[in-house]
Structure formats: C-alpha cells, structure tokens
Image (cartoon, rainbow, N blue to C red; front, side, top):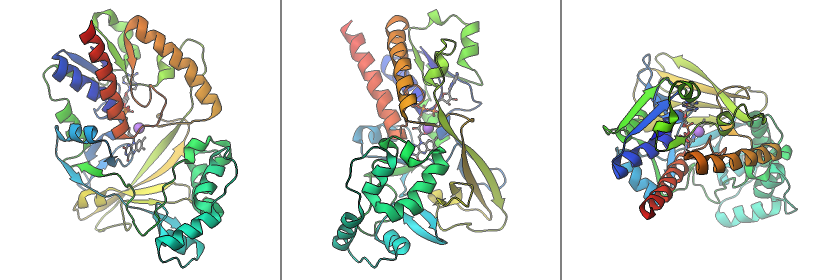
Length: 374
Ligand code: FAD
Ligand code: NA
C-alpha cells in the first residue's frame, strides 16, 4: 500500500495496515520530517521543545481515540489555558465570568447572574453569517472587542462574509473555569509529538521516505504495483490539471524570538491579540507546556497569510461548492483506482487531532470489513 503524507492521518492508516493486516505500507512525505503539522523538535539554543507548525493541544471525549493513542506512547495530562489581551489587560479565554467583568465592566458573581447577563445581550434574530452567530452567543460588546477583529486578522474577511460555522460553538464558561477545553481527556505526549509518531510508525512493515513529493514520485514509479493508495494531501492538488479552480486556504507565518536569561515572557503558553493595532494574532511561549525548564525562553508570533502552506480551509460558498466537485471526482477515483482520500487536506475540512485519528480509524474499519466480506 502507498500512503501519501506522514501526518496523523497517513500514519494511523499505515499503523493499521501493518499491525492489523500484517501488510507493507510505504509512506512518502514531501517535507523533510514525519508528523505532518504536529511535528515538534527541541530548539538547540534554548533546549525548549516547540512545534514547527503552531501549538498543538490534544483533547478528546472519544474513549476509543484516547485508548488508541495511549497504546503507543505515554501522555501527560495538560489543561491548556489561554489569555487574550484586550484594552491592555489579560482576560481569560474562553469567555468566563471574569472576562465579562473585565471587558464589559460588569460585577457578575455567579452562574445565575451570568446567565441573566448572557440572555440580555445575546442576539435572537435569524443567523445568516458568522457575525450573527457570534453576537447570538456573546453579545455585541464582546463580539466587537474580541471576536470581530480577531476573525478579520485570522481570515482576512469580516465575520459577516463568513459562513456561520466559522464562529459557531464559541465556548462560554458560565462560571470561573479557566480551562480552554472542557473535554475529559486533555494531554500532551510526554516526550513530544515526534516521539509519539516514531512509536506509532515503529513496525518493520512500515517504511517512510521523507523529502518525496507524490506528484514527482508518480512520474517515476508504477502506481499499479500498490494494492491501494491513501492520499492525505490537498484534494485540489491531486486533481490538478483538470482545469478546475483551486481551493482557498489560510496559512500562518511563524516568527521565532529568543530571550536569553529570561524565565517567562508571558503568564501562560498562549496569549491572543485580537486588536487590529497589533499585526499578529497570538504569541505562543512553548516553555509553559509541561513546565519545561531552561535559563532562556522562546516565543513564536503568528501572522496569517493566504499564500503559504495550506492550514485552514476557508468555508465560504465558493469553496464549498468547488470542494463538492472535487469530492465527486474523489468518489470516482476511489471506485476505479482504489485511491482513498484521508485527512484534513483531502477532505478540505478542519479537523482536530482526535477527529483526524477517528476519521482514519473509521475509514480503515470500513475497508477492512469490505475485505472480510470478499
Ligand atoms: P497533516 O498533518 O497536514 O499531514 C498531511 C501531510 O501530507 C503533510 O505532512 C504534508 O507535507 C503531506 N503532503 C501533502 N502533499 C503531499 C505530496 N504531494 N506528497 C507527499 N506528501 C504530501 N489539532 C488539535 O487537536 N489541537 C490543536 O491544538 C491543534 N492546533 C493546530 C494548530 C495549527 C496552526 C494547525 C494548522 C492545526 C492544528 N490542529 C490542532 C490540527 C492538526 O494539525 C490536524 O488534526 C492534523 O495535523 C491532521 O493530520 P493530517 O495527517 O490530516 O494532515
Ligand atoms: Na492541521
């Protein structure tokens, strides 16, 4: 079997093929490393482990996924916290009672008062876009100060231009809970993500070749030799040359800064900067994750762009309709050539890590039960 891409999706598929079927899996990965966007490494100047493509916090409610990841490596419970810089103060994210008190000058003391405040400010009209959606959750003031400018920076589009799904499910804490996620399981791989991937792929039946691009590879090799192909790259690239337009993605630039002989730069690992007068969206200080120790620290500022590596699909009408054309071609390709489209890029859908794992496990199970019937 051939697997294109050594991120979470491709690696889980390879692991299943090798361990369940006892068959060979060749993974080709165009980057120089395994792990896809989860890849991390130890910074040689500070000794701090950091992610190359943005902070990655594992969280899930899915018992099966949680059990699965633990069979390969040790995970350490880690409850993520995020602050947002609004009007010169650090306020908790997601919005909790403290956030409302600090940003809106309220004096709420308990959940009952919080509920009353929320129902007074929440917009109750029809929801046509992300602005309506956000205001229906957090009210006008928090929307204008925290969500609107941040969304503009993140997407380069106003929330009123974006599908309601982009700002759907804005979490709100009706108490003083400062945890960023409310999932039962929240953890980081004790030795880092790259180590977790090494364990996941640790089977002589799995072979990984990095620095190999599928589109070059297929010109030089006979793909007919593979029983099946699992493609985890961008779906539009796969069908490139068929004269359809390209899908749009948002991308991120990561700006690393090191500070010698400084304990911490900021109070927690992630601080969001929603305001438009700062160019970046957030600052990540990796030293906080798993309380790493070093004489120094390192921060990463994130700015967004629309020309770099594809990170976030842009779910607007044009892209969703275009994706539907690609999806139909993918269904055909699967029937005719046994090529499966797996993962966030091939499905043009934002997936958290647990969703990517679930998605790959379920796909494998579907194929496996078909094979058993034959
Ligand atoms: P990817 O990790 O993107 O892997 C696809 C791989 O395919 C890549 O390595 C790519 O190089 C390779 N590839 C593409 N085209 C080719 C080709 N032509 N030839 C060979 N190889 C190719 N999830 C969470 O649960 N928690 C978080 O906190 C979190 N934070 C995130 C922060 C950022 C900035 C981003 C972008 C994502 C975050 N995620 C988070 C989501 C997480 O990264 C994904 O769930 C996960 O990476 C999905 O894995 P994947 O294998 O589908 O995709
Ligand atoms: Na991703």
